[in-house]
Amino acid sequence: MPLKESTGNMYPWVTHTHTHLGGECPHKCVYCYVDHFPFGRPKKYQGEIRLIEKEFKVDYGIGNVIFIENCNDLFAEEVPQSFIQRVVSHCDQYPNNTYVFQTKNPDRYLDYAATPNNYILGCTIETNRDIPNISKAPAPSARMLAMTKVGGHKFITIEPVLDFDVDILASWIDRIRPEFLNLGADSKGHGLPEPTVSKIHALVDKLKEYGIELREKHNLRRLKP
Image (cartoon, rainbow, N blue to C red; front, side, top):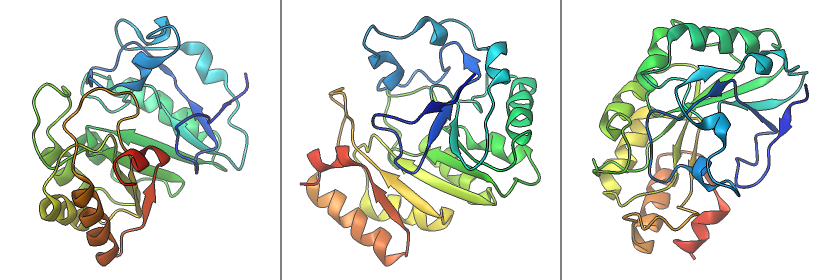
């Protein structure tokens, strides 16, 4: 089975995506892009979390940057450890690639004493504020604290960016010290509480001051003309 090439609003530095997990992500974020497929949420991503056995037969090849579980959260609390281990084992069969993981529950990254050098561990932190009715994921402050303890290659994604406090959010990123940060806006018109243009510019300036590499996504132009 072939790998799926990365398309659409995905990270431009990712070459391919692949998911072994079926079922609905337990975090149930109101802005989840999986709900915006042409015909709604695919059956593959409905129901209980489960492994899709045929996906373990996919050949990862060499020289690729593969976003693993881009339609789910492998490290959500409800995902059995055995599922994580099987996915990781599949990746480790093809060591000549770079594997990208992203979660809103980075505490589970800490279950691993060491991270392979070809893994990049990411975390979504949309804001420094606890905004109700957005997601069932751990609070942003908990994600931040966990990411300060994560070693190896790591990055932060602020997407969709929600209203925030400039100095606090910038200080969080400085504490985490990611290799880079992705910054993007809501692309699907969910009516989320969003920051002002001035806040976006102030955050960008702070990140530059702290020496954090910023990778802006094109959908940010709506908020930062």
